[in-house]
Length: 181
Image (cartoon, rainbow, N blue to C red; front, side):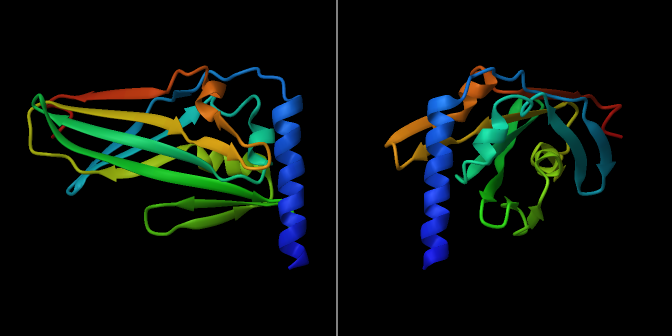
């Protein structure tokens, strides 16, 4: 019981200091050049967000609030939308044991990190096997979006995308028949 109370107190103090004393610098989030590999069941796509968490985010992550990142994937085959899905990652800091818990919605994957740099590196990674339709031309669009945080102690909501200067990172990959063989 005391542990939960202490955890709430620490989270409240951290979130209050984040709102009152942080100086906003912003980030220029983008995707790096993807690594693609064709498979029988689709195409493996590996990329990562760069410059997304360089400024301002250490306080956000240490606030103890759950930070959520949605990667949205749209696959367009021969001019028509073939599929659309979202891959979600969440991270939450536990101030009592000073660890970051990273959860993925795919496969129930959960990882723990004691170092913020290692957690940020994993949080920024996109590595998925994407379904690839039988087509002549295919476009894969990947975008990233952060959630809004609600600080209950201050009754305030904060849109984390402001820290990306409201410019959501997007990646467009165009595959032609040569690429698809």
